Amino acid sequence: MKPAAILLLLCLGTTCPLFAHGPGKDSDFAGKRVLFIGVDGCRADALLAAMERGLAPQLKMLCESEHGLFTRKFYAGGELNTPTHQPTVSGPGWSSLLTGVWMDRHGVKNNRFIGGRFQSYSHFMRHIKEVQPQAFCASFADWPPIHDFIADGSRIKDAEFLNVKFTSTPDATRHFVDNPEKDIEVRDAALKTLRESNPDVMFVYFGQVDEYGHGEVDSRANFSPDSTLYLNAISHVDSHIGELLRAMRARLKFTDENWLILITTDHGGQGNKHGGDSDVERKIWLAAHGASLPREKLLNEETPQTALVPLIYRHLGIQPKPEWNPAPPPAENLEQPAK
Ligand SMILES: [Zn+2]
Image (cartoon, rainbow, N blue to C red; front, side, top):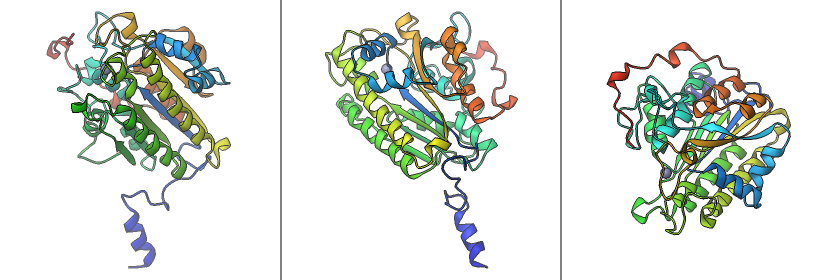
C-alpha cells in the first residue's frame, strides 16, 4: 500500500486536516457560518432591563450594530389551542429550537424526553451533515439532555454527526450551584474551537440564567427584571457571549467569512417557575446579526421559535428536503402537555 493510501485510510472518519475545509471563504458553504447561542430561561423584560442598565453590553452592542437586530416578537410554547401547544419548559423548547418543529412532531412533552421522535424530526446539524458530509458541526452545552437526547437521538445507527460535542454536567445534588462554573467550561471549549478549527456551525448553550431563575444557585433569585441576582447571571452570560464574539472576529480570515449569529432563549418564567402560557413565559426574544436575516419580518411579525432552523438553512444555502419534516403522527396518539 502506498503511503498516500495509508494516510487516506487513517483520515477516514476523523477530522483530518487534509479533508477539513479552511478559514475564510474556503469552506463547504463559501465562508458562510453560523454561531447559535442558547441562554436558558432568560426572560425578555429582564434581558431588556439588563441591557438598559449596562449589564449586557455585548448583546446590546451586537443588536445595535449594522446587520444586528433585537426582537421581542419571538415566542415559545407552540400555537395555543392546537396540537402544537407545548409547555414552556426546556425539553420541548430546545427540541423546537434545534429541530425546527413543535411538540406535535418532535414528541417531547417535558424534560424526561419520553416519546421524543428525533429519528423523524432530527437535530438540524444532522441534516447539514447529510447534504454536506464534510461540514464541521460543533455543540457545547451544560444541560446534558441537549446532547443525550436531542443530538444522540437524532443519530442514524449511532453515526456521530457532531465534530465536537462538549458536555459539562452541573451537580444537581448541589442544586446547580456550580452552574456558573460549568458555563465557563462551555465558553472555553467553544473558544478553543473558534480559535483552532474552522467550524461551519456552532451551538453554544449556557445554563446559569435559568438556574438562578429557579432559585437553585441562590435562593434569593427569581425570574424577574427586579431580581438583581438574576440580572447578574444574565450579565455573566453576556460577558461569555462577548468573548465568543471577540474570538470569532479575531479569526485569521474573519473579513472573508460570513457569520450568522443567533442568540435566544427557550422560555421565560415567573417567580421560581415556568411551564405555563403566560406572556412572561411564552414571549421570548431573539438577538441576531447577519446580512442574510429577513430583518423587517423578524422585527415586525410574531415569529415562532421553530423559525430559527429554516433561517440557518437559508443562510447556508441549504434547501430543506421534504422528508426532514414529515406530516405529524395522528393527534389522538398525543397526550396533552403536562402543566
Ligand atoms: Zn428552567
